Image (cartoon, rainbow, N blue to C red; front, side):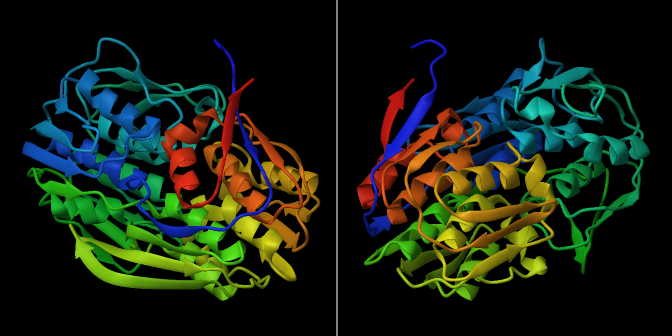
Amino acid sequence: MSGSKLRYQLQAGGKLCGELRVPGDKSISHRSIMLGSLANGTTRITGFLQGEDSLNTLRVFQAMGVEIDGPTQSGEVVIEGVGLHGLKAPTGVLNVGNSGTSMRLLSGLLAAQKFDCELVGDDSLSKRPMRRVIEPLTQMGAQIESAEKGTPPLKIHGGARLKGIEYEMPMASAQVKSCLLLAGLYAEGETAVLEPAPTRDHSERMLRGFGYEVTVEGNRARLCGGGELIATEIDVPADISSAAFFLVAASIAEGSDLTLRHVGVNPTRTGIIDILRLMGANIQLQNERLVGGEQVADLRVRSAPLQGIDIPRELVPLAIDEFPVLFVAAACANGRTVLTGAEELRVKESDRIQVMADGLHILGIDALPTNDGMIIEGGRLTSGTVDSAGDHRIAMAFAVASLRSQGSIRIDDCDNVNTSFPDFVALAGRVGLYVRESKV
């Protein structure tokens, strides 16, 4: 089967019932490895996401001399931190696979090390833009070389003395913000980042959890270099981006009643819930609590008729990773749904606007892609074969679409689902969404 690709085959219809805990939050898993490695002392993590993206981050730090045990089958990881200045030069390139988060955040951390290194990724990541981090890091004094179009691989030259800057981001991006704050740990003076719209704040929360002072005033986050990180314990909540597929699935499949346990509901990540509720979804937050500085709740979702809406622009950055499955919700809604202000979707693991529009067309839905979004007329999903373009979120989104399709759906190029959601097929089948896998 060498060189073969994974295909999903789904029959039409079904409903989702019962309860489920989806894998750990990918954003928090990445950051827990990074900060735990740079802390003084032993950091213990539970609920770590064992997807390829976060495992690649773990391997990168092992390659730089950090002792990391795990993850165990239950997602436990133990890190013997080396401190901010304890990383060692790797013997080869640092391969982050498909993970844009790893590459962008690591750029900030590695820009201040004493050694040279090279960050590489897979074919998909090698096409994604990195100038958005290279340019502000260069302003701080970093020396970074990229491919001609500002894409990976990134060659980072060691020995740079970073200086804090105040940087106003041209577009909302948690990855850029986090990259600069992590570089700021090593910079002389204060580093401040101003964002045009709120983005996920896991880095700020986790830095505080490791004992590092971060000040947030409105849209401005700042810290001063020269401090230290102190090891801690981290309980990674279930990933709301993974839960999103089941929130939409249970909303559109008549007769569904599903509870998702221990989901992270950080207010900078709940755009998916807000948008679905505006469309008429029946989603309840139960057993709300605070775990390690992050809000967590159980989400109960029951099927409901959805209505097309104009998606508020202020919610777009808070749901940027969830739009593939939100497009499926729009396809199943009554009336028109309009998304604007989401040009970031064009430079994700794929051009998610165009690839989703193409797939929806194949399934009989009127979907008009625009430069920064899409206009979708709700309708009846038919059958057909769609290409996920190797994008894990698109593959899972079209799997959800089968619940309302008039015939079977085949989805090609699904291997990368394991980057963010290992065991998607098994967990989906447990609650009523049956996916058959094959190699072609």
